[in-house]
Length: 346
Image (cartoon, rainbow, N blue to C red):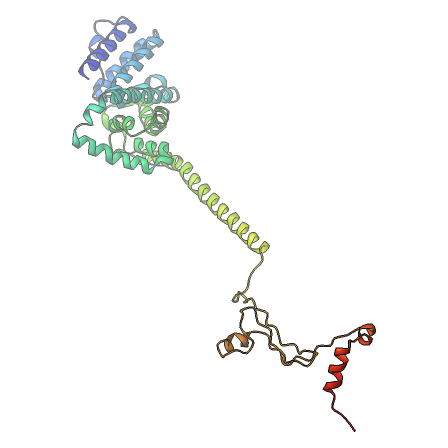
């Protein structure tokens, strides 16, 4: 980390040495990163003096300096934002400053991704990171809006967000977009203050805390939360519509199916029982056997079963129809038996 900071400082110094125009000896003491209102006023006068002659060189030096401060989370970014409003006006200063903040925070993102795993071996840092990971996973569907609100809120510091995001699954593109949009409201305030920097006499004239600035940030927060509310509303409406369609489909299926009001016991298969058939020749009748092999009326064991079977009240004699030839062709034995069975009548 020390090596990266040293190399970055050398690159910054080399860029300023090459890009900055040749300064007069009286102007050199004013070329410093502003850390107070007096430093800001002096640097504003110096850059305006050389801006008309070397506009692109001044822009390159401003951008490189801003990226360096953001990459290592060094103080002075607010004063540079105010200085941009004083040099280029609010519209152009907004575009330049928001892009510098988002890109510089991305450099801090890369540095944290490279050296952060070594810090995660410390239990205290690991527990802090786990807490932030749970909060971000809870806002996974609205991650950009959530990060924008974090940028607007004063707590936690912005450098914490830059360091934590690469280790909790936040992609580079959502990180850059959320940083640009999240810093927009605050940058409007800073560049607007810079527009009147020439008329200010002290830092009390900044008026960072005012009702105007409060309502401006509140409007930005409301604008950010509108997509979240719309997404939540549409998701709920889609879920309600899906439930309604499923209910209608279920009702249609129930109407098409046969409805069984009630179901009784299954009918028992009845067994056929033969009834006795009288012998036409006068012999004793022999009852037929039922399908179980028992004689009809044998014992009382089948009383319960007989009650369930069909009841035959009475069976009449069987009628046998014979042809005339068979009636006339009776044998002598049959005639004799018939005559012997008739009683003698005098």
